[in-house]
Length: 585
Ligand code: BGC
Image 1: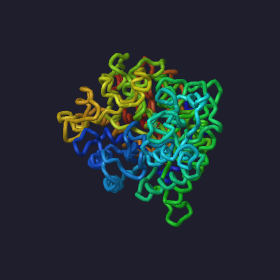
Image 2: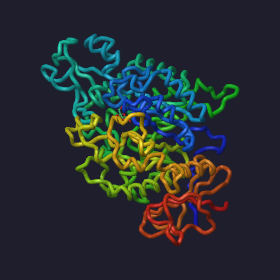
Image 3: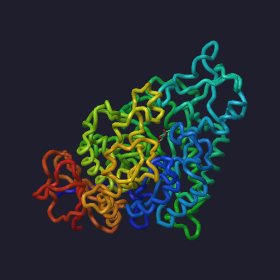
Image 4: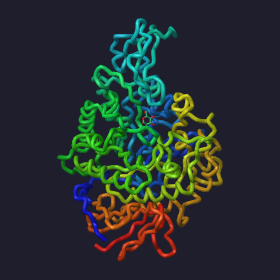
């Protein structure tokens, strides 16, 4: 076997000394759907706390919680009305403290979601802005503008919102009058999510204070929602291209014909994150006696940007620690596409000395067990309904397991989305009347949206709500297929997806793959991804993902460590399968 050293891609640090976040596996909990403590059909913080030992046993390092703050839930909590308190549907601040303490006792770190681009329209600042009227300092917290045309009847520019329809909503000229003759406010997402004005220092001060509030409570980091959106181009110029955020994952190309969208990825955002990094560093000063990188508090950007190079700007030395890298998630199931995603991502991150991250599923995209069961090539749908072409479930699961095994072999940090360790598919037969994602209504019922990946977790196959909570209530219906995939049906069952994840996570840790250095192996067909990950201690793990029709022989002198699926009778690697093998140094 010949090996191509990708020297420039070796970037993940010095083995045992590397900071935790450079190689951590981080599990995303979507609080409404993980575990329901009180039986109201919506997950909550006490429910999460009670199930945390499951995550310790799974073998992850940290948890990211999607928002649990006070919110009218117009966008499932990404519309925050109070950044410093817990919504009663999820519990209380005391419950948050208990969750943090329990997680820390179990050796798990906790990251929370920060939503700085917009608040809820029920945030006290927005209510005050409406009441105070045009020209007031209160309106300066948000992006209000007069309309165009003789009576201001036209929106200030032509921007569209991500969920469909105009990005501007007109308000009444006099508070409480009910007319619609006033100014317009900007919302890149739902009308119930007005965008903050980040040119206003008061907005910056407020968020720095919110960071400190949660840091003081002991959180280990923040996932920063739409981190690429805070600053808009001066003058808010028109934009005639589609306004998208989720890239190819929801079927919209990244190509803007060389033009730069005025609402995304403006250079000014970086000033904000430089300031935030200083705050985080102050909680564990690098030059203080007793400094340990294990206590680093971190920032992770959710930034859907044009290229890995643009993304790497968010993780320069003094900015965020991590940024979600969606290249791998968006890659089609073709060996060349996967190889490209891996090498480009590592090269871009390495250029700024940052670790890269990997992710295959989250609460915004069709789960990879379903996505990979769709035909290769066409753009992926934003949600799947009963009358849409259905994924091939068995094929999707097989490919999902192979994709995950490839991802977890890569150096850097990996994010898992709740339930993927069970091989959960999207709910693709959910009756439309249950849908809550604003996308469904705002797209004029043309895009199903994201409810299919947000269905409550199955814990015990024979209990009501499959053990999600103590009652039979679930805020979204669970598909019948979830019964056989429940945790209790998979734990200790040889060959189950849950046991595969546990084996992968254990082997990843034992072999130092998260902090290893990666090389491509040559000599395989173009339908095969073949890699070697060498740990700082010198252990070498060969990783082979076969996407071709022909089975692939394992290299001589290697020993099987984990396989995403059964091998052929003659011991070769069949199609849509990933194997990890130990190799002699
Ligand atoms: C979150 C979405 C949310 C949007 C607006 C994102 O990128 O992940 O779930 O709808 O930001 O806050």
